[in-house]
Image 1 (spheres, rainbow, N blue to C red):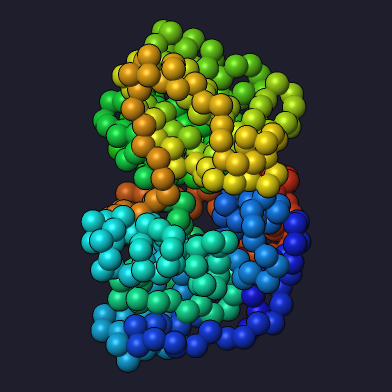
Image 2: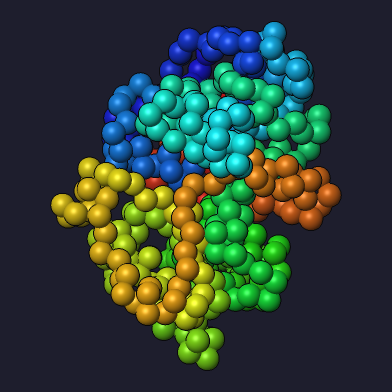
Length: 378
């Protein structure tokens, strides 16, 4: 079958690889119909992780079940399904408590597994024609048959639940004001989720015009940090108070701003501490890593950042961090899509065949030609 294979920094190729097969009675094989490129894929693509050449990328996957293991009871051949990016067993301590992003079974020695991602277990990615799904009764979310809502449903694998998770971490409530740093796909989903949850005002900070325009289109207030200190811009619009809640949808590859592309890994964290009012809450779904070979200094390379903990304490701020436990949210968000209450596909800028993946990675990484979110169709 054809699959997107990592070759080295800034290079992927569509190559022939072995078809997946049933390896356990609880497996299914899914014929992939849609698979998205994620901003976190770019960390590997850019050589900013320990990923070795040969990885098949792709953790945002949906399709139709093509083959079913003899132990699977609730999923059958022909079912249309979407899978959380978290590979999870469903029965370990963390899964039972709802922390499926930190499964203790699927990646021995490390809490959590994912498709097609470095250090997240042996699971092949789904930017391919077929995908093996383990513990299928637990990991497959069934969808209505057909092709309706295809672009919406594929976002249930990661970015829609992850944006919603950012709001859960920040405890966004009706009537809150919220600042989201980052207008990439997760940031836009966080802003959208905040509005779905009843936030009265949502600011979105970025400098990419197309992304800020999308934020404005959904009813958020765009803040361009290339035009001045975003904290000051937001304080001017909140009578100097700042917002009730704040969400970091950027992570460790944050830009220092000021007309430079220099990275400053803690800049968003420190900006949020300044932006959110005293006793407010921060949600941090943005990715931070324990080691970063491309970090701007030795401390950053070891995952150690200069964060204003004193100001965090002084303001009595609370925070929540960590990757999304997709199964906490995907069923409800699916039903909101079906009922017409949510349409997250507004973030999708390009739908392309699988063989155009190398070009799509290049353009998405460079933030050019309006590349906001890419869905590939094998």
